[in-house]
Image (tube, each protein chain N blue to C red):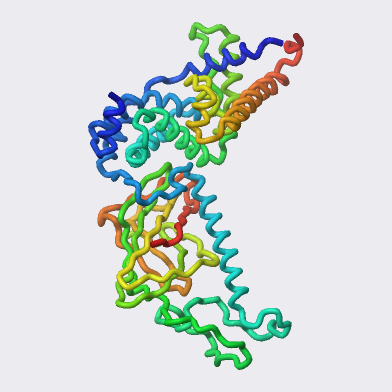
Length: 183
Length: 265
């Protein structure tokens, strides 16, 4: 059914595109938010990706691949958003830690804070590969295709992104409570 | 030791958190814009538009380097009697203008150089084609596109004269408003190849601008091109009421940016 909508949208049918966009906007936004960690930027990136999708839809050869193609556009729009923000690494904004009402344990919250801080230190490319793999569950071949990179590059990018995230989290934790870290 | 799966599980869980639904107005905004955005149907495909926007700068830089190298090579090849040490004193025909028969566009050289005697057999350049007169260049914006904080103008240039003329592939682009005020001023290109435009022929380019932090412009906003000889022509705006400018992304009053792709048939 989606392929039919894609074909109609490729022919300029705006209603068909509206149906496609409506079906994919939430997922696109979720991806963009997870890469950019900023709701406004995620909105901009999603919007841009959908507009690009409409404009370039006639160039999509395989209508069955619409979703993966759109994800590629979303990732690219995220890169563009990130590139505009020269202070990518400096815009670290900690999640407010006064949320004791949330039924999470303190350690779980600390855990998330750590991940948030560490993740924000990664490059957009590293974030994207982590989101595609850990959030969308894409295998390396799918990541490579989505990002337009060789599988080997996807593999090493995922490896280094994971390693760097771990290192960032460890480095973050080290100066604050060094004694607790001795296992 | 065996904490790798744990770390990845934590990462999975953490990424699972966060918004799953897009704000309602997002889709509304997109669908409201769709009717004014034509679909691109395959003819003109620019590599920099299919890559992230920051690839544009890289692409332009690559083109600039290629043109600079080509221009330098051309200069070396066309310089008279190379290799003679005494050449240093004798001024070569400066500016490497590929338009020997000066026209209304090309300002005459400061000193009317009487053809230097010892120059070995000047190469015949065939029928002389003069530089395009800005008065006979009609440019118009055929489309504005928005792209992640930038606006891109599709510009078509027509040689309205009855004879062929030459123009440089790159000019200095400007974003101008309805009063002719320059909103964003581009930089003059270095070396640039020369193109010949047949009578009635057209060239096309894309002009990308971004980060306009000045006062509200007067409609219509359009683009202008400053030629290497100081001549200038302004493109007919896409719409007479269009006062849209790229969003201000820097500090208030920060400088905007504007770049063009080389003119091409």
